[in-house]
Length: 165
Image 1 (cartoon, rainbow, N blue to C red):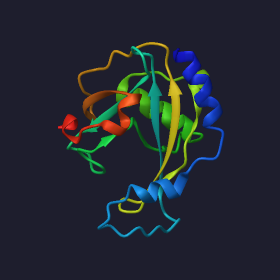
Image 2: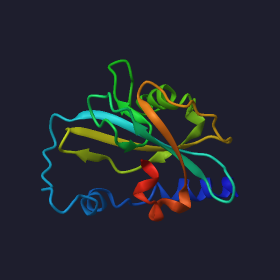
Image 3: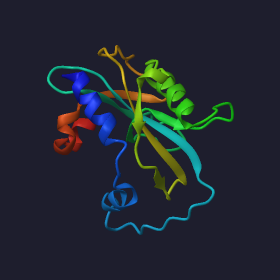
Image 4: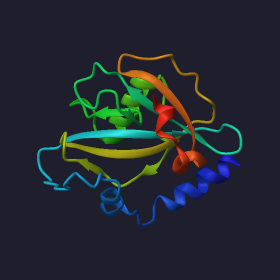
């Protein structure tokens, strides 16, 4: 069942993605959406899928309140590109390991989603999708992560914001 889901996802992710238009729909109404495409910090995040019951799960993090950028926010594991990273997929794998202790290999790669620009903090975020074949054992917290939130993929549209407190 998990393998079937991954195979379908690999096909779908290669198709046309809604990209910037879908991102525009998520912007709070009171915030002006003005994007300049220069001087953004490159970063990558990872949707790490794993089997758990009837549908795949993935991990969200509640970022530490001590971080300079995006502190206290709910996010996917990830962060900014280091000079030593050869590309954003390397950034994705490195940051996933640093924040979750999960080692993602090239063979775990499924694909990437549309890049997201965050004008307020000037981050360009490249979301990747990968998988592992086991339910991860997560640390209680890490230097950058205050809390881990395991999320069933079927519950994305019904998440209650209070679950993140």
